[in-house]
Amino acid sequence: MYVFHRYFVITDGRLSRYWVAVDSTDHFDSDQRIIEFGFKEWVTEEFFYSKLVDDAKREADIFLKYKELMDSEFR
Image (cartoon, rainbow, N blue to C red):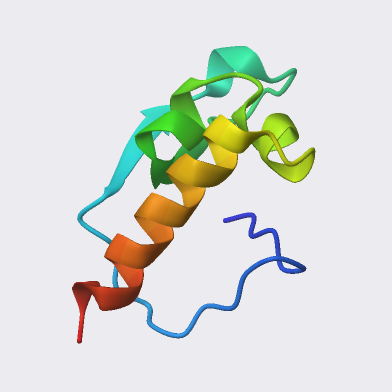
């Protein structure tokens, strides 16, 4: 699993109920199967991550909403 390690710290190995799994094999030039995990917008919107790191308001708001939900999920 690829993790954007500069932006995230894994503090709990459990998967969030807000995550979905998507087969993205057709989106990459690879002979291996690619399964992505993340919240819906992250894994279904092609440029979500690029917009997020470019400080797009919509993407930042969505990310912060999920972050808050996930931070409180296992308390």
